[in-house]
Image 1 (cartoon, rainbow, N blue to C red):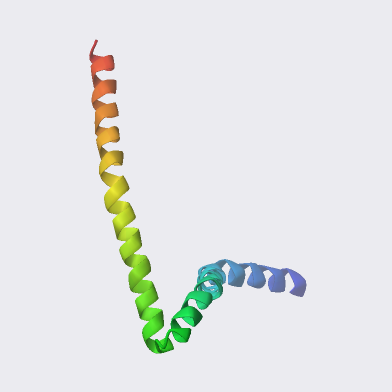
Image 2: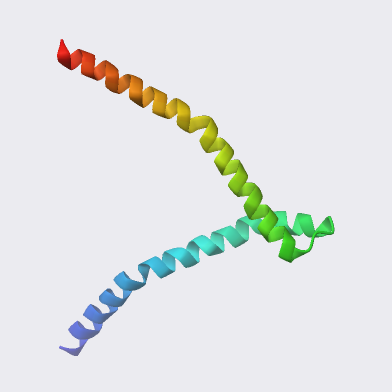
Length: 91
């Protein structure tokens, strides 16, 4: 009986701690991936406390630029395909 309670409590705890574990794994991947770039900035005499925010700002700007380049064409294709499907349904 005790084992059933322990296993149930462990499952409950695992389910509720999954988001925390996911955030931890993502943080570890970010550290491992971005550390060489931060070290490169440090060799160029940029302090680590400045290099990390600069790197994140640069990545954010790249993501915004990619979104600005790809999302308008995606919306245009979606709008044109929906109007095409409406004309097919109407006829």
